[in-house]
Amino acid sequence: MSGAYMNSMYTQIEKQFNIPASLVGIINGSFEIGNLLLIAFVSYFGAKLHRPRIIALGCTVLSFGCLLISLPHFLFGRYHIESSISQRENVSVMPLCLVNHNLSSLPTEEPSTECEQEPGSLLWVFVMVGNIVRGMGETPIMPLGISYLEDFAKAENSPFYLATVIGPFLGLLLASFCAELFVDIGSVDEITIAATDARWVGAWWLGILICALLNLLVAIPFWFLPKSLVKEGEASEPEETSEKTATPLHYFLADFIPFLKALFHNPVYMLFICITVLQFSAFDGMISFMPKYLEQQFGKSASDAIFLIGVYNLPVLCVGYFSGGLFMKKFKINMYQAASIAFWVSLLEYLLYFAAYWTVCDTSPVAGLTVSYQGYVLWDSAGLQS
Image (cartoon, rainbow, N blue to C red; front, side, top):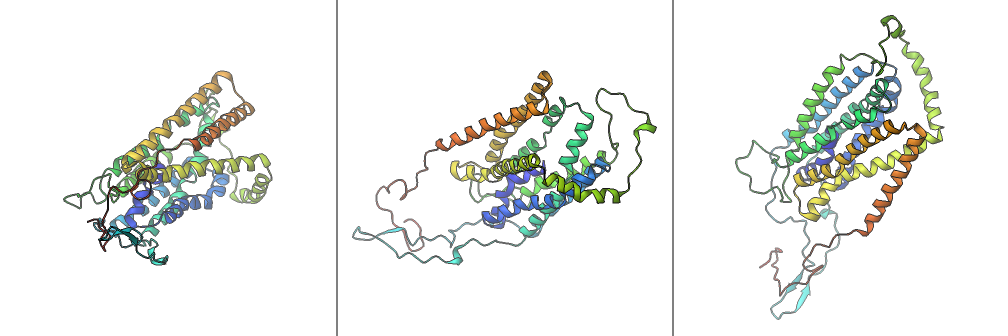
């Protein structure tokens, strides 16, 4: 939930702290940095230890990371709405209409590093550090949670359970709601701009605090779950036979490096990792930066853009899980057949994406670039139309 929420709120953070999009990409990637720091250790050792408690610990760390992310809002002060034309705008190349109706252009200034956007505050570092901590906390949730689920669920039923995961959908709905609220809600008496204004910044901090609270509450029942559950359709084993003797940790440490070497020398596994990296890179980039594109290209508010992304993507994902589980259960699909089906469906998906290159929208009219000026437009020295 917090992942989907954060990915859709980076544009709001970008505007409040006045940071460039390249820095937003680094902040977004910091989550993966925190994840990569622990994923190998958590996946290997966590599967041999008490998985529910490790998941509970991860949820607690995830909640702490969300608190760190929201901290800059309370340290930054009120958001200042820019009411004048930015000094960075270079209007010297605009045509100047003289008295004799002859058009001339002012000399073009040489590019200067002063025109490059600089961060308005270093408080964005808290967001990046919080994102790293959030990535570390999320590490055990996916690998250990899915393995814990599949240990007790039948193979044909596990896709149904995965499809009921509504966290990402709730995260996008929460982001859409918070984007409609002004960032300084409760601190200002009157809001002078609308949500569709380019200067609008939503209450991104409010949703991340809600995510922190929910993550902390979700962690509570995991502390009390058993180490393993009984397989569906099977009778519970007697307590004396189901309990296994605890293995000392140093035995696991001795096998860790050989285990990693075996994985790196497995061509099928490495190919699957490369494919997964490409898929998640494309999806994560779309979720993170598509709201900004919808805002600028189609004039949508941040709330509408986030809601549209959720409506376009997540219901289809759930339908795929449900239909895949039903298909596997009805026709008794084995692992090799499932891999073959996934290949052909993925190929069809990429062909459809490739066809989208020829689906373009009309260019928005821009005076002086795509359409001609109607009559003469006078510009004074300040760059204002007169």
